[in-house]
Image 1 (cartoon, rainbow, N blue to C red):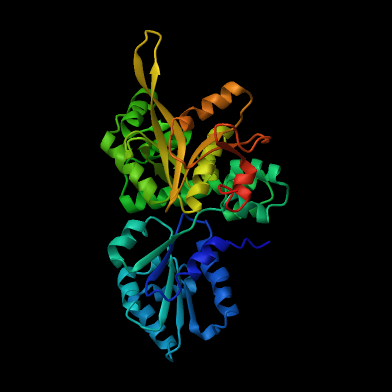
Image 2 (image 1 turned 30 degrees about the vertical axis):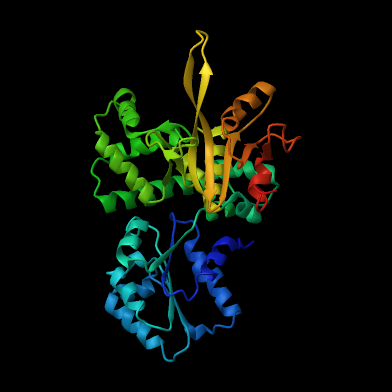
Length: 417
């Protein structure tokens, strides 16, 4: 069964003919090439564009090895353009092209071409695009499959699908694999032989073991507040390493640049300002995170939080961790300040949601605990708790909304329902 990836097709469609290079980025094996060379190309053909006006070059194929030369590919493209009609240039794995920045800038000067390129490894980063194209590169970031996309191809019900998704993640190939052994080998090998090697080669890393140790530390602490200083202490006390805090900072940036992890900043809700360190780190694909730990730490509470975070980002939200300052009276009678955490503040234009991730709400005490930070926010934006449990009440008397994880992930505009 084909996974449509309609969200990303729509993103390409609204950017057509905008005079910019459409740059499709994302972690390796998340479906970028399939989106451009199959889904988008079919859309062009179905829209009446003839085959001769689509110039598609997959640079990772050996038959196109000569076209990795910048002059040869520009000459090839020039020879394909034989009239004044609109041409669509699709370039896959453009980082394999020597001097690709110069080539793409040259294509911008051809009036009747619309250019789409993919790039995935650590030689082709978002910050490179911003630097090289000076405002003329339009990035579309592709994520691994959302749970809804995953279920389009999954052979089973949503409950079995969830169990597989929280274990093996959303890289498209894993959905087609029949055995757990296949998935485990694929994800483990992909992490070690592709992602890690890309990062090491680009950044000329020599302390490879410490990079691997850092990844393990981050994978073990998703959803927990952390910072380089705290990680440095872990290295000294647990691993027995003297890695410096500056090296830890650099390695974290390398992992973020390669789309392996993302960082959620803390935001003071009442003070309306970012706090800074500590922050939270989440993995772009939960299957890769689990593979990194040998599938030994598949704890559903933290994984569910990671999946909610990724889903919000896929929907286009800016996602931060909320901090609510609250004054409480101590037994001595004195008032003391206490910091409460809102798992996520999701913002998009004029929309804002305060969201808690709660695996289970077994009793009133747990409900009170999860609601505490939300009750400390005085504005009118929605306050939501997403739970794994079956929901009997949609709203409570305090105005808090409850959404089941399946409804949140599978229903469009679920935050607005």
